[in-house]
Image (cartoon, rainbow, N blue to C red; front, side):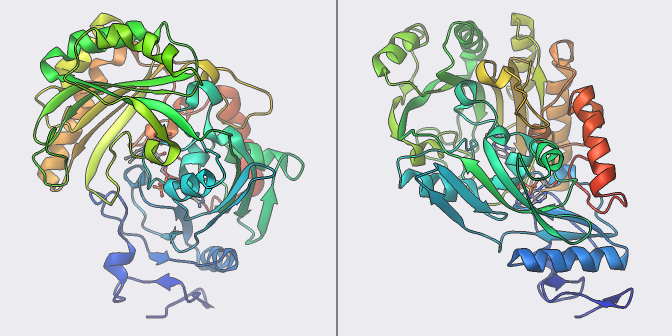
Length: 447
Ligand SMILES: Cc1cc2nc3c(=O)[nH]c(=O)nc-3n(C[C@H](O)[C@H](O)[C@H](O)COP(=O)(O)OP(=O)(O)OC[C@H]3O[C@@H](n4cnc5c(N)ncnc54)[C@H](O)[C@@H]3O)c2cc1C
């Protein structure tokens, strides 16, 4: 169906309610989110993105960009907005000379990881192979190399973006440095990004794995892991987790239908023996399974065992200023036996905690720990139960919760003042007024 809004004919990539493809087009990666925008656009080129932006502006519609829909839950009501889905605008090229990758807006992380690995290079990818490169970078980007190399947003060297005037711009340190700064951590409120360029690192493999313990030992294991995080060098980025795995066929037999306390760690240094020495006190606890091995970067993309296809989920996260025994007790008590699939605490610090003048809007996190709690939500009733359980866990951590949260781990609406420092928020609002005075663009976490 071709519709006319404000006398401007919609570009061919726009799909409307009632069109045959409508229900497929409006799906997000998170299948628990029922997206009902005014229209969906699926552009294949940056020029088509610009045409959609111009059409939306002329038609009185707002524009919300979406790479995959991993963070669709935070978007909220899309009435009056065209959802610009970028999965057809795809592709990655790697330049081994400059050690950079260029990823088009719809590219997912595994595509960059694999292309970089061909040249013995690595990117600061997140835990999930199918998270979108652009959404992750716009929000900050916490990888398993984060303590050594900082946030992924600060490895961006250039960003291509269609702004509210319908122009495609390439911004970097020399060209529109203000907008380049805002896009590195300020989220999707400034335009539709069509591509990013990122620095790559000369890393071919890491030493990484899990130590699996019965969930009954969660308090003891997480306390030992917390003590351990206070001793490890920046080459080690680790996660303390509780996994309560359902009896589903795509979960491997040894862990299917069982619950565990898990320590996951990634070592980026050269001296594997020194990591073995570091791991000794955790191994002395007697894990039921020890999966540490030297693994190529491709394999690291699957370490966290995130779902690699769309699923219905409900989750939320926050950052913690401290992790005393009482916080671990609250975390374990709130998670075990509740409708929660996975609850994790990631160790930050190191390079993540060091702001630098050349960084973007999200420069560093002072909080030493980051938490995320998630459950499976295939029905409205399940979603309500998971939301209640996740809210209760995060609420029980309030005494230690940082005043700031991490945009990418926030799956509910937050006060903008909690997503950025006061100075960064102020500067972001000034840039937003300059580049998008009519507030055309709607992001998952508005300013
Ligand atoms: C299973 C899972 C694992 C994860 N693991 C990690 C992890 O290890 N580390 C980490 O830091 N985060 C992680 N995340 C969080 C993830 O980084 C965020 O959900 C991020 O927003 C996903 O980006 P996306 O493009 O895939 O999602 P989307 O929902 O498509 O995008 C999120 C938002 O980004 C903006 N956006 C996306 N694309 C564009 C564009 N082209 N132009 C303008 N704005 C755009 C929009 O505001 C959009 O609402 C994980 C999430 C999940 C569900």
